[in-house]
Every structure is written in C-alpha cells, then in structure tokens.
Image 1 (tube, rainbow, N blue to C red):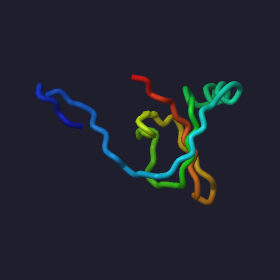
Image 2: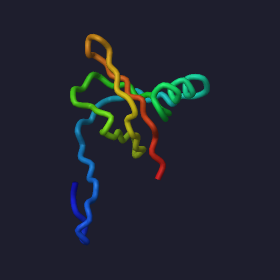
Image 3: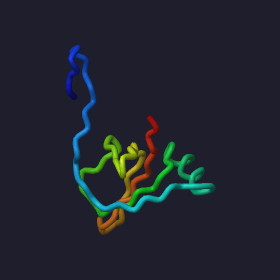
Length: 89
C-alpha cells in the first residue's frame, strides 16, 4: 500500500516476474464450464511453473490486465494454468 497526497491508501502493483505466456480466451461451453466451477474466468493463461503465484496477483499482457481467479499446476511442477478474468477499466 501507498498513500496519495491526501493520505488515503492506494493499491500499488509491483512486477513479480516477466515470463512467456500462452493466452487462450474461453468461449462457448468451455467458458460456461469455468464460470460454474470457478467464478468468472474468461481467459486461460499458461506459464512455466513459478512458485509464489497466487489469486491475489494480477497479470498484465500487452497492456491488458487480468485478475487471477484460480491457479493450478501439473504434478511435476513444470507448467501452471491460470484462470483469469480480464479487467475492463
């Protein structure tokens, strides 16, 4: 947290890591399946396993911000799948 000129708390985001990612917008049946199970996921983002990634984090890809709704990884911890919701401001 940080404070603005009036003393109010302001959320400040800091870069955790820069990694390659595969981005797959979900459509149709796939989109509704994710909504029913995990909330409002609209995009599936795949990255190499990176310890410390949490649902409290945010992803920015080419200027587009995504909130992480769910984090899963394979049993060998090689790859992570992040179910995300794109933020529209």
